[in-house]
Length: 224
Image (tube, rainbow, N blue to C red; front, side, top):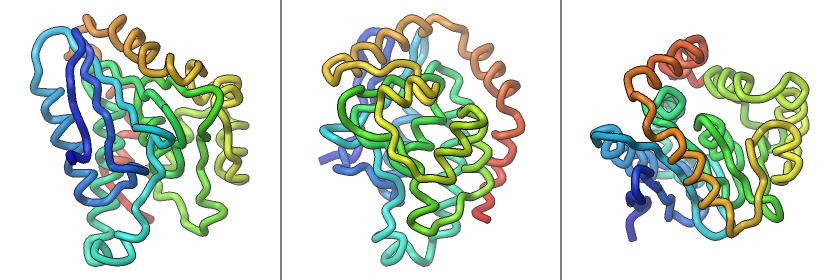
């Protein structure tokens, strides 16, 4: 089975992550990169929605792989992951994360890199658990999270590792909407479609200007 599936519904590309918990390892990262390449090569009005399956959006890094087969490339891999976050943040098309379930750690950061977020209200958590699993945030991760969250939410999310449900995530402005499970994808598609006519050159330039400082840190790819 493919790790990701990419299909088009009108002007909206729908990228479905299909790797179970959708943990980031080399194969999964490369599959995401190829999907983003395909979307970026497209022409005409377009936008992108990213979603997981069942109860996971993404559960973060594949720590088993990083401690095993991926150990020798861990530094290069983490640099590539940070650069993917930057690519999503500056993507020249509207992007919407359809958070169908748990978005933990790097999975939460991947969601934050999108322009907009629609989350399931009744089940699933947004969580930055690094304080509890004893893993420091790379500078680019800190910059990304800080740029997306309010001051108090940034402090609370990072220093408590709290699990934040969809309704609270909306109240805290982590996500733009919290809706019933069946409405997550349709609402994300509607948001994306409403922006699909935007000029790609202008849209990308505006994002690069808005997030220049964060993008610089992510592009550097420093892991500590």
